[in-house]
Image (cartoon, rainbow, N blue to C red; front, side):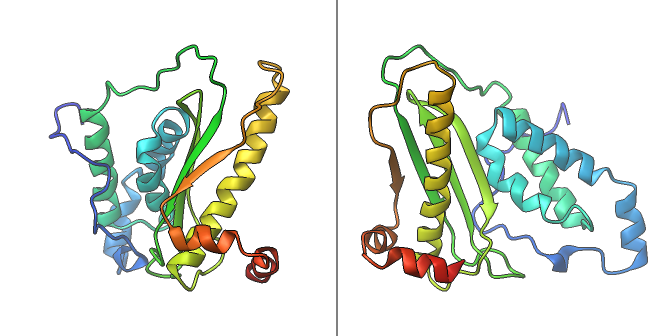
Length: 207
């Protein structure tokens, strides 16, 4: 892949992957057995876990088909590799700062998984303005609206934010993180629902 053509994004808007793209006969299955798909996805996952949050969504999607990948899934891994080849100079930079504050950003789609109709969420947390923690994953329950999908994403992000703040404080780097946690979400309906008094009861129902 050293001399491959570069790609501007790890996954393009509108690109969908599903089990329908898995091998349909023994010949296709034998062909895919010769390709180290799981190994490539594992390497990509290592990269996104350590330093490349920008490929988290794409890697999460491709990881769903490790047990029975098809040629379209293989092509998708090559697209991610082409993107990394063109952005291999990208890096995370951490600077000294007195502004020790945890800030999060999150988003979710709605019913993005073709098979299960489950939504995919993603969040990123910054400490002192730099990325320190991120995740992209499929929600465990089926949301029935964009509001539900957004609210469940807020819930996942909030749980992680509380853990992250306690973890950072426990390291003893700072006495405490005084400023309240801030998490930004572009789903106004989910934010409105979050302020309702019966939110906890509804959340228990979803669980």
